[in-house]
Image (cartoon, rainbow, N blue to C red; front, top):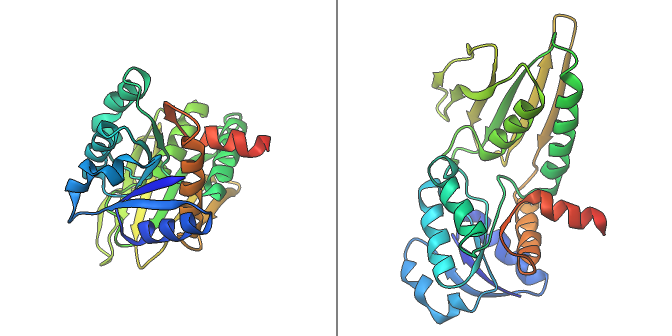
Length: 255
C-alpha cells in the first residue's frame, strides 16, 4: 500500500517506521514547510494519507487530500466543533473518505467498550457521581483531549443523570490552573493535566459516600497509537465513507 504522511512530528516518524515494517511504501511526506506537495503526483499516488497535525490545520488538510483523490486517516482532534457537519456531508454526499479517531490505540478501543458497559451498569446506581481526568504531555494543544471527550460522550449517552460534559480544572505545565471543579450536577466534569512527556492517561471515577470505582487506561508510549493508525490505513484502503475505530474493531474481532 502507498501511504502519504501529513505531519512529520514524533507521531509521523513512528508511523513511518511501523508502516515500512509492515511492507508499505511512503510516497509523500508533507509538513509545515512543503504544503505545495499536496498538488504533487507523488501525493496523488497514495492509497491513503495519515494525518496527525493540529486542530486548526486538520480540516484544511482533509480538503486538500480529498481534492487529490486521496483517502484520509486522521488522529487530529479539536476540529469537530467547527467542521463536523461539513466533514459528514463530504463523506456521505461528496464521495470522500475519512477514518477519524480521537485515539488509535487498540487498548483505548477496548477501554472504550468497558467504559460504555460500566456507564450502562452505573445508570442504576444514582448514588455514584462520575468525573474524568486526562493527563497528557506538554505539547498537546487541546484540553480536554479528543479521547476524553469521546469517552465522556459515551457516558452521557448512557447515564441519565449526566446531560453533557464540561471542562473542569486545567493544570498547565508550569503548575498554574484555570477553570474549576465546581460544575452543575448534570455535567460530567473533565479535568486536564499537562506535564512532561506523558503519552496519555484517562481515568473515569465513580464516587459515592460508601466507596469509589475507577477505571484507567495509561499509554506507555506512542507505539500503540502509531500501530493503530497504520491498521486503520490498511482498513481504509478497502472501505469508503466516514469510518471510525468501531468499524475497525468489528473487523479485528471478527478475525
